[in-house]
Image 1: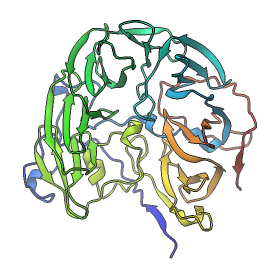
Image 2 (image 1 turned 30 degrees about the vertical axis):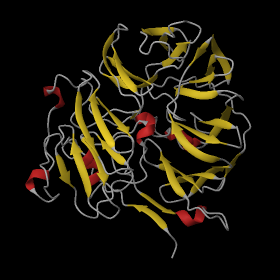
Image 3 (image 1 turned 90 degrees about the horizontal axis):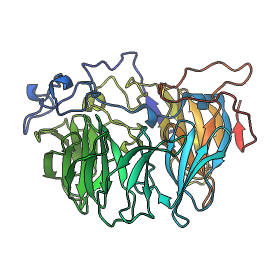
Image 4 (image 1 turned 120 degrees about the vertical axis):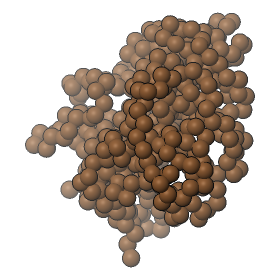
Amino acid sequence: MPRRFRADGLATTITATLAALVLASCSGGASAKSEASTPTEQSASARADVAPEISAAGYMSPRAWMFNEYANGVASEFDIPDGEVLCALHGDYAVTTNRLNRTVHGYYLPTHERAWLLDESTCATNGFVPQPIAEGVVVAAVARDDHAAALADFATGETILDIPVIVTGSPAAPIPLGMSGEILVLTNQGSIYGVNDAGELRWELPAQGWTWSTNFMTGHVFGMKDREEVMVVNGVTGEVVVDTTVPRGRPITPASGGFMYQAEAGEPFTFVTLDGTVSHLEAGFTGAQFVPTTASGAVFPLNLYLSPNAGPVFDASGNSASFDIDLDSFQRDGAGNEPVVVAVSADGKHAVVDDRGGTIYLVTQGGQMVWHLDALRPRIVGSYLVADFGVGDERIVIPRFEPSPGAPAHDAHVATVIMRDRNLAPTTCPVHFDS
């Protein structure tokens, strides 16, 4: 039988009550059906040590979903220049660094032109993951003896905030993890730091060898070491709120109220709240599928995973989306890998399918192909689709932000921080449209 990916998106909206945090709702050893593990609401405003913009519904970054406007087609592709690495992508601007030449470049995506250049500078990525914050890009002045850093404006490269030296003598730029209220949290060589909006170091936590998440849950940041030690740190105060271990090598799934993991394949998931309380989820629970990854900045309340009404796909508002896709129809003959859904639009109406053989597709909820590209390893960065078009050929795929003549209009993207030049001239690019 054809292998189908089906998400029955019910009309029910995931309400704030359903998405409430579970900070104090679990008790040790309780089953998922017990009264102790029933989700309860807790007002985030009652906690002065939590970032003020975090609500009881949890936090989901709309930048982790792709632009709705991809349904209008592809306007152009921005080819990241040879020798440069993408280190930030926000709004109309991409920021890259050339580590060999020690330069940082800002590019204006509608025209593909370089907007600014910083010499004797560098900006870091967390592995291959670009910097996730919308406030600016962290750049280090490598020519200075103290290797000072700054938060730079995406559009101009000008300094928004001076960042104090956090690791003396380190040649690397610190990596921003995110904002927690007015605190910018950064990591350098495993240790983490909190800097306020005046550029003052408010707290630091030496943690050599730790790897930190690039997202926040109720103002907290998650770290792991040696694939078994787990630490949760309050991003406002720097306080360690959870310090525990998981079975070695088992991945954790962060949620806005804590994190969960599966001790062994087939066993019930264990959930650890932000106060360290442990409970076990119902046997057979597998969690949500086909949602943006935490590396993209997506953070979900645990109850969004648990809801039987939610389905495995969510839009950027936390509502369930409805997809009925025959994934086998997007598989080339003789291909050994199974196609996968790798991204969903902010409105939940379209998805990107990767055949993992060299082609990616934009498809509707019913599985109809809109367009396809010959590319590999698609991923979402700042709501843009980024993919590899060959060895050393990484490109940013830019959607048409205005529909073609006669095409139906689509809803605007949910992120209000994105400002655009609508005079984007169409350019020729290798995109294939299907009727």
